[in-house]
Amino acid sequence: MNGAPQGVLVSDYDYVLPPGRIAAYPSERREESRLLHLNREGGGLDHLRFGDVLDLFRTGDVLVVNESRVLPARLLGRKPTGARSEILLIRPWTDGAGRFFDGSEEDRVWQALVKPGSKLKPGTEVEVADGVRIQILDSTPDGGRVVRIESAQPVSEVLDTHGHVPLPPYIEREDEALDRERYQTVYARTPGSVAAPTAGLHFTEGLLDELALRGVGIATVTLHVGVGTFRPIEVENPADHPMHTEWYRVTPTSAEIVNAARAAGGRIWAVGTTSVRTLESVARSDGRIRPGLGETRLFIRPPYRFRAVDALITNFHLPRSTLLMLVAAFAGFEETMNAYRAAIEGDYRFYSYGDAMVIT
Image (tube, rainbow, N blue to C red; front, top):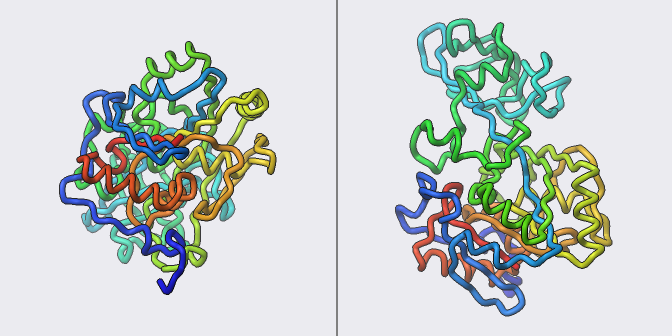
């Protein structure tokens, strides 16, 4: 507007997705998803299959993956009146602060979202199953709840037995048996996310093994995806958007793998925006990363100078989203929006179970 540069306002990131283009189910085989390659040097676009990503790597590169595992954190039950209720567990809640899920007794108290919010007030109980109840303890400033899981079973068993996979709201169906496997990366290890780091859904054990044979290192980080990833930006100036907080962890081993590769001239490939946020949150000005554990509110948007990431594998993201802004900061605003137009014209499938994009 009025000569303002593109990519600065939230409305710059609008696009129209034709009906039926949101993937409701994953591709039959993970590696058979389509892959749009954006080369930043020439600005060219190539239409590939995901398995072709192998040919874009060089010996000495490092692939960084987010090993966070999605919790079956959606619990369905009824109030004493018989009314249906839904609780989505977000993260363990201790003394007013979030923490990693580790299966301890403290993990019985959680921050949660509830439906119907107007009816589930503090003091209410929801019965999920025989011997499993959710007690609403308190309200949070953002409209959520603090809840306690009442059961003789460990929380992990309650979720495994009674929990549902929390599919994103734009997948307009109930979760099914296949989602327990396919809405999870093959390298998911650390439980705690309410949404999958979806760029990683395309990798198979075979692809990872082949990368290793080609001399590509693999480093793991953990960032637990929170519900804020789906919340739209409701302001026009991104600087006014309250960025959501997410927990991350980078081990000394992973930091050593990344730093050694960078020192030797290898490129650092981030799988998904979650890996990008983690790496950039712990990066020094020279691109080296520090091990550590904590929370990040890092909002990456144009203009941003990347310190730790050289290539990005990602899915296609919602309009007006922080994730789309991160991609534009990495690839360039015009290049990103041109790529999205090409993906729409080329009948790519969008969002969590959709196709992928690689930016080198």
